[in-house]
Length: 131
Length: 124
Image (tube, rainbow over all chains, first blue to last red; front, side):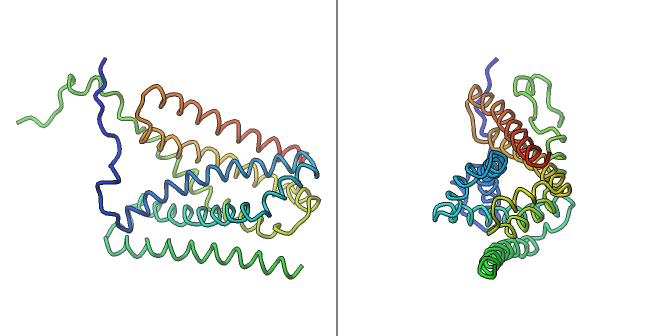
């Protein structure tokens, strides 16, 4: 039985990027990136269960420059996916479809995820220096 | 003019793919993950400079163990559902798509069980 090769998804490259389309694809990218973060979460828990020696190996990687940069990326991705996910839940419930509202909520998501990321890292930094 | 679609033009196109179950479960796990992710990121931030013993003691607290297990369940279910959509949208080769979809289920399930086992090993 022949299956015609029909296109399944919008072809991103034929549209001029705009806030809502860029935020939509970013939701996917951050979700994908957070999937790698979930693998990292598993590594953290397994290293904790394995013992202090194994945890040290994990911890050494986390506090390295590369580890911190990735962790910062995960923090932003988490907050972005979280805030934009809540935006999506409002859409699912039938609210916020007006163009103006969609733009406001879009910028709201970007600003709040940036603030939450910055806030959490500053908080960790000050907690670290206090103790 | 009839607006109905004849059966012969639908046959061979496969199912419409999107069952409402997938949609519902994606939203359900998303709602569950809102408080759980906030809790986990705040907790990890508080533990940022903690040593091994402190973190292990934290995981072993009954409330924390429970919340971690719930987070793991919701997280990997949500991840499986999200990756499934990405695979269905962008992997066009039928054979490769099937392989990816099967692999997606197995990887998500294995990671969830490994994570849960680690938490329980620490807690019990």
